[in-house]
Length: 293
Image 1 (cartoon, rainbow, N blue to C red):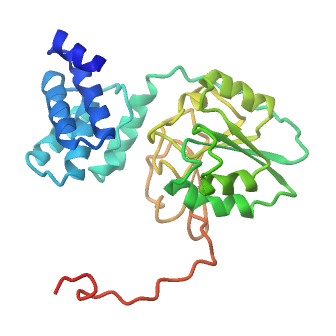
Image 2 (image 1 turned 135 degrees about the vertical axis):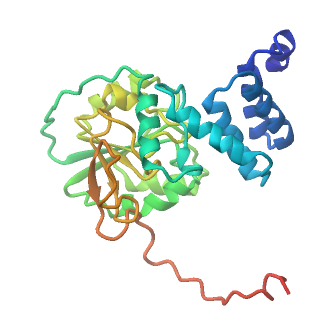
């Protein structure tokens, strides 16, 4: 493994340990991943290393020193002006103000281009959904019914998938069958995806990723549609001048919350559209059923 060679050549180079920890994490070698994450953070007090370390320790229910790590992360983020990677502080802290500060700091990594307000004059409004999770994933399970319920008389639905097409994936197939065009762009560059979006004259782009893993946030900083909306995958602010709106409900975005740079679009009851035909779970749960007594 090349990262093992890097670690041996320069045992003081923190990114080598961090990248190797991500591979171990992917392989479910959690003990090795934890060791490398702690080593990376000891060499370089990078906030992204620390947030990853806290997440992994939480997954492993390893609470040793975790409060100290959390306090270190809070202090680091309060005093930083730029972060190199998005940090999911919602996992650790209930602080909308700090969430906004971190989003603004992350946006400084991008050259944000002002979008021209174009009216494509399409016969139907063209909605483009962008996601790496058009597959057997929670996001698609939550949104597939929405695709099926779209008013196809007034809207054309385009799905831009950052995940490869898989004929065996029945969840992905629901998306394919319910949209006008499913576009596999997982091998395309950001600029190519932007160009494809413009060629299809997408009126409204809905990003289902935000800062979540495997996002292509840079597409939206450069502009792929006249109107851009943050929806579902990352229920937080993405900072100014990128997304025009965020879709939520009164639970996700209360009236008192002032952190959002985007304009807020509210669903009346809930932002999630699921199968209304699902049968409710009827079995009664008790301790005996789960052998707790």
